[in-house]
Image (cartoon, rainbow, N blue to C red; front, side):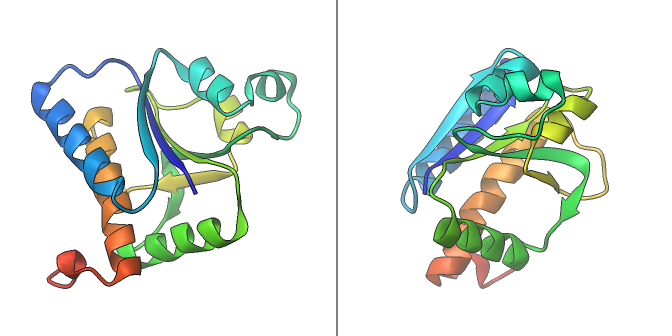
Length: 154
């Protein structure tokens, strides 16, 4: 299993970049991971091989599985998210791309091109902060699956 964490836009805050780098290093202990800053939503769809199908209104197929982070998506507990990743790892050979959109969110076409839409909760988060929370939850999920004590004290 390979995970890509993609986000739209450049990182403005050095603290956000430092946390991004730290969690990418931590996740890499468990699974190959890549962090990608992309220019726009179309670049996210192109990364996953979905740009043409989204524009044409066709069902998505591509070289990666796309999971958009969206406030209207499915909510998970940390344990449920860990099982989501475990199930994906066991059943799907394609890379899994988690995408954090721009400040104004993803379009309906992008939502239609995604296989999964996941919410980090009902509160609205700044997109750079959402990225860090996603990275931490991906790391936490792997520590849960491996029995690492990181999650034990929650």
